[in-house]
Length: 383
Image (tube, rainbow, N blue to C red):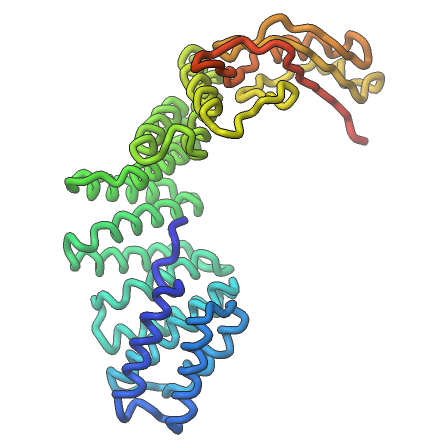
C-alpha cells in the first residue's frame, strides 16, 4: 500500500500550525476557558515535534479535540474541530483502533464539508483516511468503502492537472481494495481509468506503472489468464528497470517470478534469460553467494510419488542428490549420495531434480558450470 496521505508527522506539524492559528486568532472559537485549550494544544504540539509514540499522543490529541466546542456553530469552529478530529483519528489509526479511527475521520469529513463545502480540497485527506480505516474496520460494507474513493476522485478531478499524481495513486489503491474484496470487475475498471489518465501525461512514472502492471497480473491470475500473467510481469520488470538497478531486490524478485512461470509454462529457453540475469546480478553484488551447499533452485519441479509409496510401510524418507548446475542453470550428472529407505523414492526425486532450474554462477563476467551442488529431499507422513 502507498503511505498514508495524511496524519504523518509532517502533515501533523502542518495541522498543528493551522490549528494554532485558529485557536489564538479566532476569538469566539473557544467554548471553554482559554487555558484549557491553549495548554492542551501546547502539550500536543510538543509531543508531536518530539516524535512521541502513538500511545502517548492519544490522550493529548483527545484533550485538544475535547477542549473544542462539542457542537461547533461557526465555520471557524467547524474547521478547527475538523482538524482536531483528523489528528485524533490519525493517532487511533496508528494504534490500529480502526473503528474509532473511522468515526473520527468521518467527523472530520462532516465538519470540513459544513465549513468549506462538499468539494473543498481539504476534504481529500480525511476522506482518504476514512476510506482506509473503513476498509480495515470489521463489518464495513464494500459499497461504503468504494463510495468514499469515488467521492475523493470527484474532488481531485475538479483540481485539474496538479491533482493528477494523487488521482493516479487513488485509482491504484481503489483497484487494490476492490481486488482484495473480490470485486474483480471494479478492480479492472479502476485499472483502466488509471491507465487512461497515465496515457495523457507527458512524463512517465515507471514505478507506478510497474505497480499497476503487477496489480493487473494478480487480477489475471485470479481469472486463470496465465499468458497475461507472464506478459504483465514482463511489463512490470521493464518499467522497474527504468528506475531501479539490475541488482535491486524487486528487479531480482521479478526475474525469479518470470523464470518460474516461464519454466512451468514450458518456455524453458525464455526462463534461461531471466536465470542468467539473476546470476549476473548476484555476481555483481559485493556479498555474492559463494557456498555451493547453500545453492538453492529458482524453480523446483514437483516430486511426484505413486500412491503406493505412501503406504504404511514407508511413512518417511530421505534422499540426497549431488549434481552439476550448468551455465544455463540446468541440472546434469545427478548422483544419489544418500537414500532411505534405499531405492524407494530415488526415481521420483531424480525425475524432479532433473527439471530444477538454477541461476548460474558467473566467473569473470561469464556463466560457468558449478559441480558438487547438493539437494536434500525429506518426506514424513504425520499421524
